[in-house]
Image (tube, rainbow, N blue to C red; front, side, top):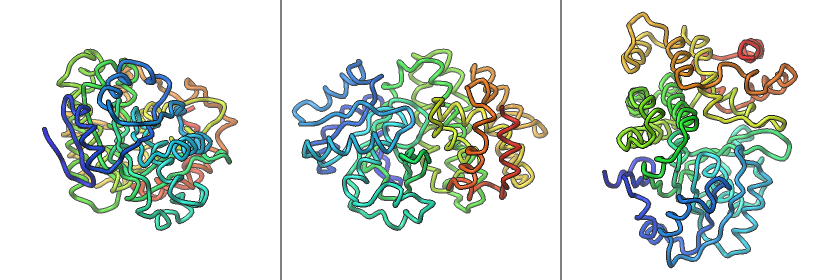
Length: 376
């Protein structure tokens, strides 16, 4: 494939990383800040990035936390300013991309991040002054490379969404070869993250037929290739399709998510236990789907079953539970370290989350209490 223009510019191909120099020139970035994490920094993939950036002056922030924080945004923004940077390269998974968007906002807008949070009316406060971001995913799951949102845990402990079309990266460079070394467990967790994005956006009540078409194709694609990618990590065809499915999930964010994400966001903000976002989404998806089922049009349920290759009367939720089990993903929040003491804050966080508003049906405090308790 070559260049795709949909919401933003996408360079998608095996070896697409080699186009980075030309992309920087096109966007007008002369001195980028690379935002990445310690797991990648200094490793072979980072070496490939360095090769693609030969003759380009750059600075590096390599301390992205698994769940991005306001404190990390401030540290990276300080490096951006002190180094005279004029753009950001996000290199890694969703955490690095969200942090990069936070830096791009923080260095171009004067107020605190909380001021720009979606639930505080921040969407309209974010302007085109946002510093340009180039996103290069090294996992196939988040879709943040084409997403308009960044999830940041603030110093207050709240995990809030920063949402704006100006936060969509100027260019996404999607090179499936960068995912060949991804461990099976991370392939499964990130793959089910993308699976969840496609399914949850598809059943969102907002009207956006183009996004729905992309979502259902992405769901079918991920369902077909995830087992192969997990069991045969060197399969280039499987890696290509998984990265495309993750991209498709990101392209459908315009339609809104739902209660899975309303629950996983506050879970990701917990300070005493570190939880992987994609794993949480996979775990929560079956019970949330069951809760929403009576609000999902029957024709959509039929299309979902067809995409998953299951019988017309089969349970979608049970199919997802079986898929999670086959991928060795955890079956409860308790197994991940969540306790009953966490629940009051989690329930309130879910109710306030921006994704709660695009769930197929309204959920009450009692609904979220039931859902969280059931998953312990």
